Image (cartoon, rainbow, N blue to C red; front, side, top):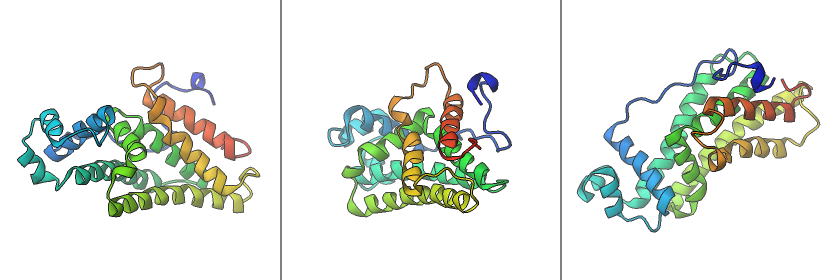
Length: 215
């Protein structure tokens, strides 16, 4: 199915719409603004004074919410994962098939991490993993592995049912995740396609890559 054959703002057929963002709390607003600052300047160069100026809060106020700059970075990346995980659970609760579940996983991932602020969280999860403290790095790596596990589980079920192309499941798992994970690097908010349209395109490409009839 091409974009011309769909409504420009359609989500995956039969799935609940992606929830809009709620009005952020003070802590979330600090994380949002800091995420953009870290991406613009780099984690190492950005100081707590820079963060205080960008967020309109004193250094003492920052320490009320976060124990250190590394703690703030970990909180930002974990928050991005929490948004994804909560939406995954909501989208998967009433799936009709493994094909439907795989489609919803990819679409949900794509549409969320191309949203303005969530794209910043996703980019930091790639660019600044090395700047995290070891315990935080391991925690976030486990969350990434859990998402890969979701994709792999669906591919294994499809393979067992004879519904998967003759592809290596490990290679397919990482390829599908990589297609989406790279999106924030090149997707432009004011470009020709909206986040929802781009998510639909990526989802169609992914499904055709692993299913004989594209699902």
